[in-house]
Image 1 (tube, rainbow, N blue to C red):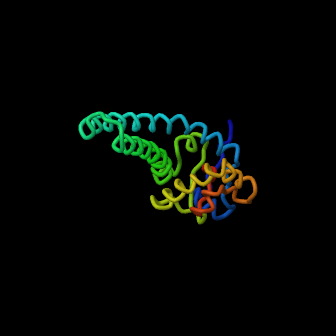
Image 2: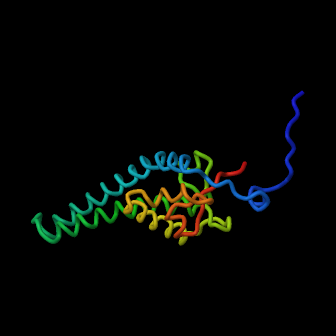
Image 3: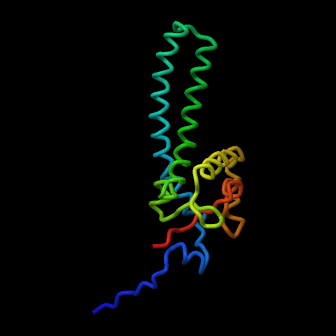
Length: 168
């Protein structure tokens, strides 16, 4: 008869306090992002299409189909909706009880504040917006995760967050 391991009755949060968190590596974080990317793009395509349809109706009603300032404003509004969908995807997922996007959850990761507490909506939004700096630096902000003990990218450093492996 095979012996079953005994539980010590220690929660994952208490275990983190005892032995420290298991910070997620760059490769696992990248893999989670690559899982999330098509999901986010699908959400952006859906909201972009809806914004485009509404913009086309507004353009016809307000501008009579003429090119000009209304066309430019409609195009800017559509791009804004698409960008906000991307920010919203990460913000909502990481502020949720999962503390993770679907990609992170699938790979056993979660995002937390540096003190171990879950992200609130404000912290998740700051992290999501700070991710823009990683993009603007052509990915160099992400590479910071290779150079520090907590494996924090620029967006993590700004928002005071860490990505850790979930403990079962």
